[in-house]
Amino acid sequence: MTFPVPDDLVKKTAEELYINDLKKATIREIVAIAGSIEKKTGLEFIHMEMGVPGLPPSSVGIEAEITALKNGVASIYPPIDGVSELKTQSSRFIKAFVDLDISPEGCVPVVGSMEGVFISFIVANQCHPDKDTILFIDPGFPVQKQQVHVLGYKYESFDVYDYRGDKLKDKLESYLSKGNISCIIYSNPNNPGWFCLQEKELQIIGEAATRYDTLVFEDFAYFAMDFRKDLGTPFQAPFQVSVGKYTDNYVLFISGSKAFSYAGQRIAIVAVPDKLYHRIYPGLTQKYGGGTFGSVLIQRVLYAVSTGATHSAQYALAAMFKAAADGQYHFLEEVKEYGRRAGKLKEIFLKYGFKLVYDNDLGEEIADGFYFTVAYPGMTGGELLKRLIPYGISAISLSTTGSKQEGLRVCTSFIKDHQYELLEQRLQAFQNKPIKNIAILASGSGSNAENIIRYFQNDVRIHFPFIISNKQNAYVHERAKKLHIPSLFYTKESFENGEVLAFLLENKIEFIVLAGFLLKIPLNIIRAYPNKIINIHPALLPKFGGKGMYGSYVHEAVVANKETESGITIHYVNENYDEGQIIFQAKCKILPTDTPEDVAAKVHELEYRYFPEIIETVFLFGQK
Image (cartoon, rainbow, N blue to C red):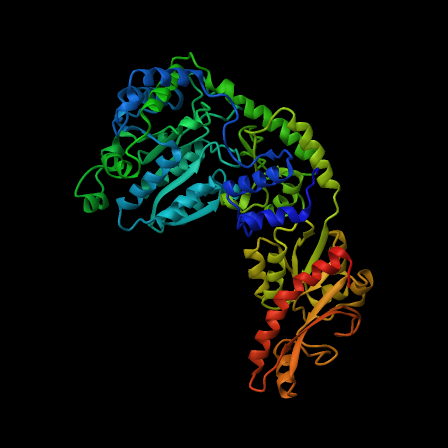
């Protein structure tokens, strides 16, 4: 077997893993789909979904950890707030590369930044009884919202794409002025966009945090990995920019996973500045009977969650921090490999018609680094993902990151040297494969439209680029929004004067589905799409068809005529109402006691069951 794999294999694999919608699939679920297809076919995937370091771990850390284990630390519980050496070296490292003064007391080891963020979310929402909502400056790391969901906390978010620079101030104010935001969280450099919030933006965030007494969580998972700048010289500018220059209400998260490629040991630090560490909050006093932010974070919450980080791994991180601050370990030189990979990958994607989504960093080009974002014309992120997976290319949809843009997050960490050529071959094949572009037209609530789209949501053979309606306020627009599909409104005149036809042809629409569309299709469209437009009618044609026979009027007529059966008719559309060639009919029994509402329910059941199947049969397989 070779790529692309059979279209139904992806759909079947997703179903076996109980994944109903690829665009909502988590990182681990995409890993599972790709892994399952690899196992079934023996074919190699190009994995770009998971941010696992793809470089050798730091030898400095390994040697220090081995020494610690030989000295017997494996038999001893580590101090809950961290070993003295790590606390000291963490404080020094932060001074060396961020130019912030945080005492060793406030530097606390945790089981990866994920645990650090998790426990900080808990404490933040307990500080003030009236502040119970977390604000995400998106896009961001999808699992952090999952943490909030697990905790049962409220959150709000916005995509910073349109709010960079001075625009950020008013946007932040619109949330903080409500008085319910406990903390703000973002990553810098950004996961997945890889843009970097700059000094003036951090100043806006910091000053707003002070003004509204809100905490700021600054996630440095990809510490100093803005490779446009030389951030690797200790105690010398330029430094990694931080909100800590503009407020005391901040917490830093610095991980050993990416910058030091030390992911397997799950070691990171939470760094709390002195004023915040010793601050007494009324909510914490009420809940715990006393304690400061720092002491509650460590002695209450961290202790309850994991009792601290692995003993030997703390010595590894301490050694890496020390060597870096001493200027003996040039950690950024090693991870610049991710930037080199990103540059090559971007070139290939752009060559085959893709575009960068987050492509501007306040007038500068986006840095090349651990992640970047791509889109393909006319496709949502979910649709693009389901079309790339058969070619052995896996990533995650931007919608899972809180982004309002359509596209995919691409991770560079797993890319191997031989896979650049593979990627080019597969994207070329992807670009050349025909896909059925189908337009849906609807006038009402859009329940049939939604049912059709969901039926094909993991099907790589069909693409629904948009929904068209002749009703501006029809509920189908809301359904389309939830499905992440554009919806458009066109007047009757636009259909008749050729504007709609021109739009359909411009977007290379091959087939048209009428899903509760009440406007008569004009001749210009019928002639352009002979036997390529199908409609569903809620009765057994030729009975109860024609002008004015739609929706409840049909079911009322069926009951009034004392029919013993009704059903659905799927037919091609011609110039006359409901007179096109019949493709398929399905029947349901009508009882003497049935009301029009009863009949409607039975007919809807037939519509939902059969309409997608007939679309598949007619448009994909060319069968009547």
